[in-house]
Amino acid sequence: MIDKVGMIGKLKERLLAEREAAAAGPADASWRGRVAGILDKHGRAASQIIAILQDVQTEFKYLPESELRFISRELDIPLTRLYAIATFYRAFRLVPRGRHEIALCMGTACHVRGAERVKDAIERELGIDAGGTTDDMRFSFDTVRCLGCCGQAPVMTVDEDLHSRLDHLAIGALLEKYR
Image (cartoon, rainbow, N blue to C red; front, side, top):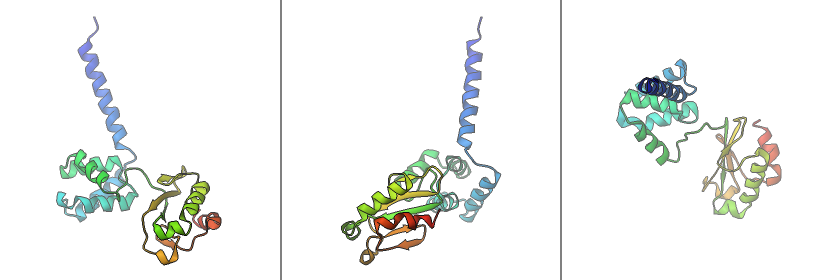
């Protein structure tokens, strides 16, 4: 006769082990050390969770699930609470970002001066839609409501660099500098 209880127990153990391995993600000792340092910097205080998440995101360019799990265990904060915070604030990202982050202004002044054509040119050049990241992880592209440079419209940032008075025909050459 087949021991169904034993089989179910072994299956449950295997599934839990697979789930834990998947949750571990790309984390290794150096990642854990960096996150532990961030926690120490903030006194391992749950009240500092937003600052902690900001520092983790600065370090990794997104919030890896494995590191959220680590923070959850270390600070005794439910993982669901961390996800609630990370999904509430638009500044947090749960997926990896490209090495170069492009933000194109779509505010009124930029829109009137051709931001839509610039957006189309960027999407064509990178082969992604706004909100996406290239397969090679080189670029992430987003649109924003305003960058506060209306007199120089249309404008965009690539990382910390501001590019103004954009011409959709020159986007390829501009992005080439970052390849």
